[in-house]
Length: 260
Image 1 (cartoon, rainbow, N blue to C red):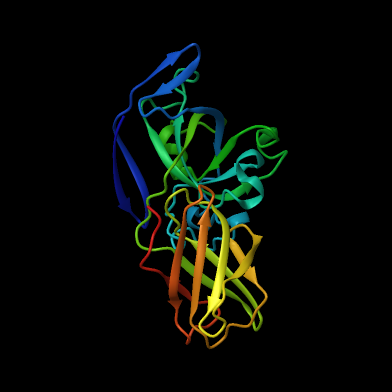
Image 2: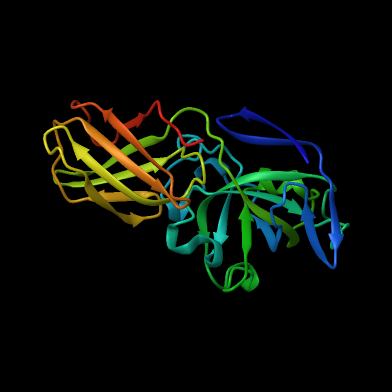
């Protein structure tokens, strides 16, 4: 498969020049050796602003978080209690199964930014089903206009390619620090995080509050802050003094470091 990647509107856009796959015993085999998995997809209401679909991950605006408009709410099988927030998937409409509504040789890379609860969309998000409730721009990249139903898709995890560094948005008050971590490259999904103040000198573990929001019950006001982040795939990066001592709650700071 030949894929060209460009950045547009602050998010990741995938343009497929050619997409070749073949069916072997009912399963799809992809040229890079990765396994395609089966799922289904629907889309959010067309009149809903796709930049606001941060939902259960806590992203206030998907452009602000660095994800653009190609986003999706994913079922519990994929969401993993919020662990999947920021993860990237390549999704193809399964033309062999539904040639009426699927666009042939079209794919879209989406970021998981929300949770699709059980009993939503007729039960398609119930365990153990894998399901993507996509933004309408992302959905209409792979499916025909006018389809208000459900389409079969193939999907696989892909590496997230982000523009700029990892971002840290400071929330909370006094000794309750909650940090939204966004625009994360690599696998995109965070397993663990730590924070260190310029006067504390030791790494303090943070705990997932909800979605992409991590908390530490410590007062770090008037201190420079550093963060350490470990992704699900095990890669770890340090973000040293990414937040100046003059920081205030509500501000976002972007690092110069990014996962590849």
